[in-house]
Amino acid sequence: MSSIPLTAAPNRWLTLTIVALAQLMVVLDTTVVNIALPSAQADLGFSNGDRQWVVTAYSLAFGSLLLLGGRVSDLIGRKRAFIIGLIGFAIASALGGAAPDFGLLVAARALQGAFGALLAPTALAVLTTTFTVPKERARAFGVFGGIAGAGGAVGLLLGGYLTQDLDWRWNLYINVFIAIVAIIGATVFVPSIARQGERPKLDVIGTIFVSGALFFLVYGFSNAETDGWGAFDSWGMLTASGILLIAFVLWIRRAAHPLLHLSVILDRNRGASYISIMLAAVGMFTIFLFVTYYLQTALHYSPIQTGISYLPLVGALILAAQVGTNLLVPRLGPKVLVPIGMVIAGTGMVLLTNLDVHSTYVANIMPALILFGLGMGTIMPASMQTATLGVDRQYAGVASALVNTSQQVGGSIGTALLNTIAASAVTAYIAAHAPLTPLVGANAAIHSYTVAYWVAAGVFAFGAVLAVLLFRRRGQGLSLHNAPHTGRIPVPEAEPALAH
Image 1 (tube, rainbow, N blue to C red):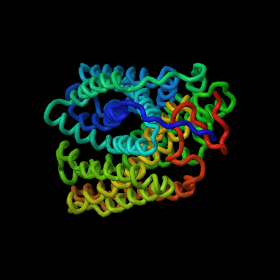
Image 2: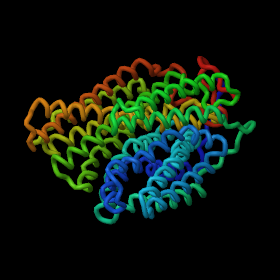
Image 3: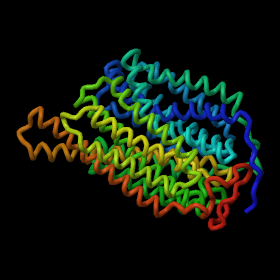
Image 4: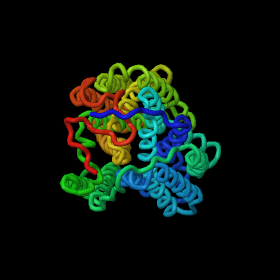
């Protein structure tokens, strides 16, 4: 395999700052609006049944268009796609903030999701093609992975502050200011990389298949969360998703210019990375969902107190991300680091199963959040760095999109599945402890959270075993610290070469 000289891109650390800012904006918008929902509902007067669409509209557009967004960035260029994504996200956020009614708010959230689907994979692809020196690349992915993991918690903190001290609309307006700074920075500092070879073509049929599959997948799980698994809109959509996904795989095996080359995901290291990110997202959404409920209902925390409560998790995640990518990944590789992170995060989940009506934050919740943060900070940067390693430049955008797709699918599955399990646990507990009293109701809720934590701990245990089995040992295939990242990057010889 021929090597290509590695040269450091100018302004790369400023580029990292800009990319990190954009990633933070996209990730925190998955949670920042949740805390603002009660205020928005009171202001605009929409029903409880409609309320979920403020969240679902974003996740549907974001999840279903991610692979298309990644491919568009491959086609039109990273810098151009990045700036277009920032401008579109800012406009959508301004529309949502100024929305006079429910319909425009939902439309603006869907538009946010669509431009987020362009922005998120482009940001990661910019990072992948900008940082070519192995040690610097590890440091950059440590920052990016930390933000990807902590963004949801930052969203809860920011949402609590903006809703409580300003107005719910500022949860959307804040993106405009972040985007303006990022647009200016991207225009000046993000490098433009000239296309090499012929201009690639967009796989329209493949795009329709996979976008439809992802849309029905996210919609099916979102619907299952509210209407149950027996509803046609749940199992029907999930069945349609499976059919379209099979059609997509069959199509790209024979397409002349496939949206996604199978060798991108069939490489063991990259496949293991995508699976690890998806399983970690299940756990992350479990924490945000049920710990938030516990803090606000059992401990009676305000929105801003709830957000502040997640700061130990954020701090631990950032610390682990930096130590892991700079010191541990180069020495141990993802085959060791990712399973260890899974075990640590799962241990944090197990600690949360001990909560009851008399538990306190400092003694019972904070240690679990710190452990969970350390685990996520170990899993995410190593997985994200490996997921984009060794991919041909023409597929860097779509490979980066798969990272975000894995997170989105994991979050959708986790939220729907664990909410359903928790609801069943509440019903069973109340039936076994009749008659219903306030204390029985409180214990039933905490029991349902405990069941969800055990299931999430099992997911992490499964993820640890899977990571051990799937990730290659160091020295097999492409190493994290010897793969060139300029020009056309060859895939390992064990794989078929990527087609042009």
